[in-house]
Amino acid sequence: MKHALMGAGVVLATAALAACASPPAPVPLTGDLLIRDVRTIGFEGETPAIREHAFVLVKDGKILAVRDTADGFSALETVEGGGQTMVPGLTDMHVHVWDEAELGAYLSWGVTRVRNMSGLSFHLPLAKRIEAGEVMGPHLVTTGPILNSPGPNAQINHQMVQTADEARAAVAWQAEAGFERIKVYSNLTRPAYEAIIEEAAARGMPVSGHTPEGAREDGMPDEKPFDISFEEVLADRFETIEHIESIVWHGLRDRHDEDAARALAWKIAAAGVPVTSTLLAHRNLLLVAETAGAAVTRPGTELLNTVEQQTEAENFAFWSAQDPAAPAEYAAFYARVAKIFQEEGVTLLAGTDSGIFTNIPGKSLGEELVLLSEAGIAPYDVLRSATYSPSVVLGTAGQDGCVEVGCAADLVLLPCDPLADIGCVSEPAGLVYRGAWLDRAALDGLRQASAEQNVDRTMANVFGGLAEYGVDVSVLAGE
View 1: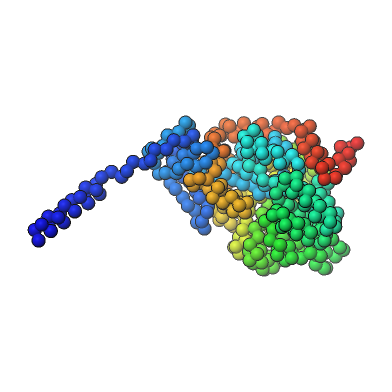
View 2: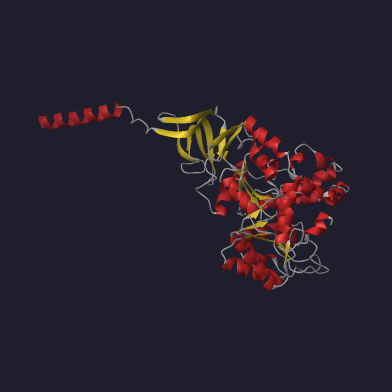
């Protein structure tokens, strides 16, 4: 018994010594950039994953480690975070890019990825130049040219198709040109739309856009339904449906009925189809009406492409002359629908329609997030719509839109807590872009450079792209 007690004493003493021993030293790691003392927020779960006083080590454009101490870390460059908040780089899921000049503006507001929704041939090499580091700009995802049929919503930059054969040929042309995504529009005829869906599926190309209505006839939508029902389109499982505004028009036949909106939300959620919000697109129409046109030249509009802005003269004149009462009522209803969609489990994605009308590149996304918050959506869910959710939809979850080991080092440093004040997203304190640190002065420089535009290059971008799919550009050039 005595020996047994002595043995037990040795075991206890050894355990006590082990408990008092220092924990093993952190594994030494060397990176390119160390961001010290930041509060990180992850958006992968239903609630925020928050780390207080974190240290983030970056190497080769990716997050190498995240710890609660800098022990064992070394880096070529160190940035003091000062307890500020770091979130994943923001994604704007609906933009219109006309030239590389405007890209810096997106970065200056913390937007590290955009999805261009009206593709032209110049977008494909531009996206490659961005990834190669030859051009400073957000990662560029693009659809091909917009597919539409003649009708009230047709525009000069649309690739027009009416028959099934024309539609199949257009999808084939876009695929062979290198585009990976299709965008459809409102006026598509039934034969053309059905052929697009079939051909795109055969080629593995996701489809997004306005929900096609078919040929517009007198009395639609008030007196009779659209030729193609919203439910038919929903069954085709778009990658995303664009604009709450267009969903109200097609899915609700423009009725401002909240019960009907909730029933429609159930269908959209059950189908698992995400919705890009773009509340700002309509809100800026209202803003121009409210200011009798003064908003057309408000600060920031100098970043809009000057060639595109010349095409907006008629729209500017129209909305400047409108009584704001009706568009204000529509804007309020669209906001209520956004909240209903979120409540019923529809995946919302933040998008702005920036690059057209008065929707300022980069700045618009912060404004969109504020509108979603004002609609009653919690700041966490609002931020999720511009970080994690786009990564899921675009198939890059775990690679970006996160602040974890292995994620892309595209990160935004914010001067306050966005979960308490979503408005603080509007002016980042700094940005980690492709693993490199850009302070506030660098971001300001990118913004200023975006106002220096190249009209000749824009004309070549647009006219060259339109000519490739049959638009008579001589009409546009005034020849």
